[in-house]
Length: 243
Picture 1 (tube, one colour):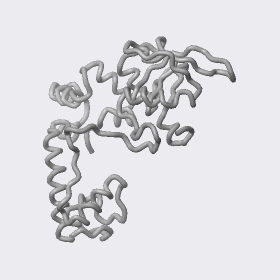
Picture 2 (cartoon, rainbow, N blue to C red):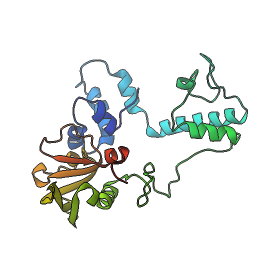
Picture 3 (tube, rainbow, N blue to C red):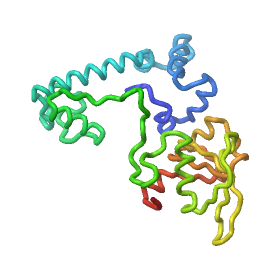
Picture 4 (cartoon, rainbow, N blue to C red):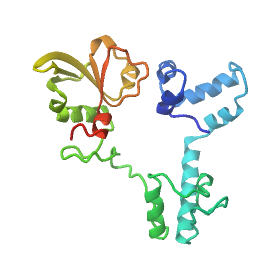
């Protein structure tokens, strides 16, 4: 019921989003290009609901969210919140939460804090500070990486435990040259490209022949070449292999 983000489209879509990015320049303009194509009569079928969503301004979505938060805070302050009431509207709560006995982990802290503080607390993003990934609970890096630079730093911290020795890091592609232990006591050169998500390798139009391995936080490239090695750091930390 909404225009998908680029990661959402890559998860559910039939074609890779980079095709649209290559054609239109960036993902944020794809929806408007769709509207224009429909207006020119280039699309078959009925797209009225999609066109309405595509024409909705992001500002309007933000205002809608703020209005819901204000209603939520007022309801919390009046003690009007009653989770679990079957098939009944609950003041301040969006309709999908009516009658629910639990909420998502990300929603729960905000709701609890709002109730306890009587509607006087509103969790918000502070624009003058960076957004961090979830805590890693390691002694050397507190949060998960949110960009390519963070991936490179995290890899450098755990490289020896994974059987790598870093020789050099550079700005041009590929990002890193290292030695990799391929057999007990036997090492080979390896060319590494750091990416926050592995699909960014294609988005950045890198040549697969120019690198042997992608080191990423999340591996989500469905079309990754079969011969490309991929180290997904989030899986390593999730399975507690190191750290």
